Amino acid sequence: MTRLVRILPLLIVCGLSGGAGGLTRAQLLEAEPRVREATADLVAGLAAGTCSPDEAAEASRILASQSESPAEEYLLLQGAFRLYVKAGEYVRVVEISRHLQNRGYSRTALLSLVEHALEPVPRGVNVGELDTLLRALKDDVARSRKQRLERRISRELAQAALPFFTTEGRPTVPDVLEAIRGMPQVKAGQPFHVVIRCPLPVTGGEGFPDLPVMAFTNTTAATVLSRCAKEGGFAVRTQGALQFLTRSEPSARGSLPQPPFATGEAADTIRKMKRISIGFVAFEQDEPLDEALERLILAVFDDPAGQNADFDFVLRSRPTGRFPLLRTMRASDTTFYDVLDLACRTAGATFEVRGRCIVVLSGE
Image 1 (cartoon, rainbow, N blue to C red):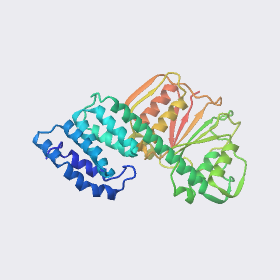
Image 2 (image 1 turned 135 degrees about the vertical axis):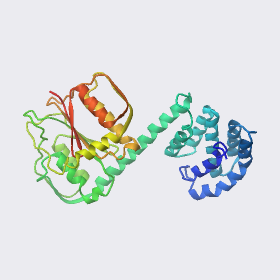
Image 3 (image 1 turned 180 degrees about the horizontal axis):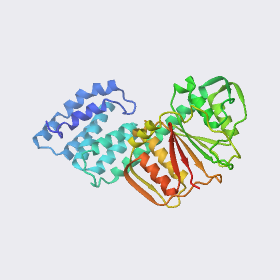
Image 4 (image 1 turned 45 degrees about the vertical axis):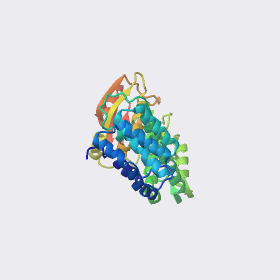
């Protein structure tokens, strides 16, 4: 049986994985035999060459509009979707995609459907508004995933009860962060990583502002993190699985974080950095290094393919709080490690991998 003839049966199997609004797997399984029976003549016509893909797609769409079963309609529309792609009728593909969206079809499942349907389409073929739809779906799915992560991390930090916590022996914000992440009630939840921006001390070295000795009783991890960040002069925000802590004022002096922050195998971190593929990246003239790196880091962590990224970032500006500026830079088909290296060299900065922490140091 040719690939074309197999399109409708395969779509039914695809649909059984779910993502069809409020439809259940049981409802889709129940609808499958009826859809197979209804499309038998179409499959036979495709096999015999008496029915073209666009004709079969239109017939499947009409069958969907006539069905009183949401599950049957859903499966038939998936069949029409793929057949329209095969026929190059991209305007109709967009119409069906919009219809599926309006019926509550999962954005994630629809994105998967569009991407798989476009796999056999040669690169460079003009697919019209379908390309715009695909980009919008990717942005929407990434945004939804990020928001879910943010809510989950915030909830877990707020629910992590701490009978007692002290900053004694944890003199800096990185130390407090690492202590919180190591707590069983936090460690068992959604893992998070940190991006810390902090000017270098005016007196030299790489110390962080010292925290006063504080003791907390009957509190939560969220409260401790918020209070310690405020005492250290850091603003906190959450984006996806990343906690951004930013300080703009330098300290006169400070302490270096204690282990286990920034411990681990640097070689393992470098291997992970080199496994993250970057299709294309562009940095503009006079863009501050920290802003460019934030875009890069977010892109890596927002991409499902980068979910194995297991490292933190410390970005150290000059005591003025200003990061060096980039020159215009373009790179394609490269890795996260190489892009970071190129960006730092372009701005006259350096980076070091210390355990599972990536430290960027501004040049003089």
